[in-house]
Length: 202
Image 1 (cartoon, one colour):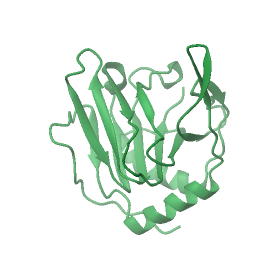
Image 2 (cartoon, helix red, strand yellow):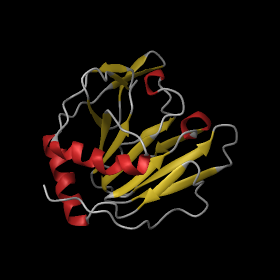
Image 3 (cartoon, rainbow, N blue to C red):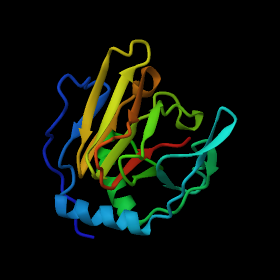
Image 4 (cartoon, one colour):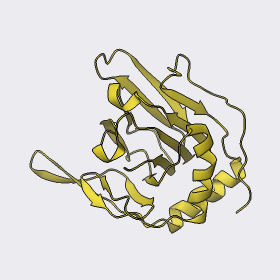
């Protein structure tokens, strides 16, 4: 794969709390982003989990794949998942995001949103294996989707970021404790999107 390129910050949502979130559009060259999108869709060992709600099992509305160092087992939609091995592309992206995050990551969760029906409901990434005040680095490829956040104590305080093709989003320490986020379903036609969230599993 060619060397990935870094571009200047652009497109940050108005009023976005910078102490919690940092957004960079054009983090990765569009041509390379196209290649990575197709590669991840075709070669990732995707799984569709189930969730239990009101005594019924429901299919999670997206596909996922967990990758990381040996021992970084993780609960995806309530199911413990052993990590798949790192690929060269995932390792190169990890090396790119670590200087911006200021930490070394040992795992990454890939989410595949196949169309507008795929989504993730309001939640916080507060699993105990992530430790206190986790930092999460997110890279997106494909269809632009809205990343919504809202204050847990006051839902009137909310923001939305359009996660663009090849963009980078840093969720800083403190976000998961006091805020929750989602990718909502869309009634508009949506193409494929793959999102990577780099994490530290303790």
